Length: 406
Image 1 (cartoon, rainbow, N blue to C red):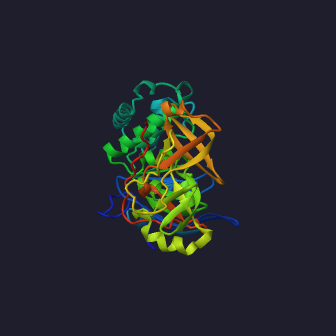
Image 2 (cartoon, rainbow, N blue to C red; image 1 turned 60 degrees about the vertical axis):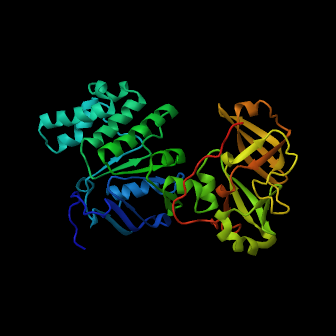
């Protein structure tokens, strides 16, 4: 295959970056197993996964810092096989920042431009312009050791931005920062990407970070892409039970359930089959007594401080035997400020729910507490044996939190 230097604008509809059946092996260990994905122009794609999933390996292969064991990588529709990192027109920002400790902020940001022997007036213009956008003009004459963590992170980002590359690879760029700085800088990254039309591919183990900034999330597990979806779909319609458990805090409750006589029985509840799970009904019935797994998010469970005198039917009065509320024993209370997470046990099942501060004041560990699902259309079902989502729907599903303090 003929190889050309990357860097030119891609034709309409052609991804800036693309991986086809990309693999990487270290001896007998497979770090990446034939993954395929694309990064469109002016998009923010996030690779999400736990430590050891293959996130950094993917970025290093795209940057040319490591050699792939199989598959193909393309930039603007052209193979980058054999191209040196300097010829790929890609900027990579590492989790350790890698700033020159003996150089000022200006010198660090100007380093890639000096290597290209650009005129000093142009270098000054570019660095000053990027520093103004990142709000770090005040650190240009300071050494990294005199900067705060956020200032060092912005300086490293600025060093990449001054080059105006075709794509940015960000390897857990916010992992070493404290929570307020992470929140501030992820908003800054999203703003820069949107306003400047940059193309970002970022790796992170933090699902909150991924959902906050991504146009598309690639969920990576053990070197394989489990799901590629918009953030709303990843949260509301995960590919499997493990994905549902990984994305979301407080964690989703996964309950053993059975479908009998048109009702989903679990944790003392007998729920009418929601429309979102109608296509999975045959699968559920076929599972018999072994049942299936029902996923319910904490924000989709409503606390009932008083025991209902009659079952809450939510308009399902024509379904005999339906029970829209159940009772469990409170085993844990975790305060989150304006909200609290209440954990209750119902027989062998355990689930979490959110409540307001006012409700929290009336709840004690060990007491019996009634609860009800807030929206049956937000339920998710998984195969008990494989863990795969059996109620998945095509098309975008917009998630709206169901937490309503009383």
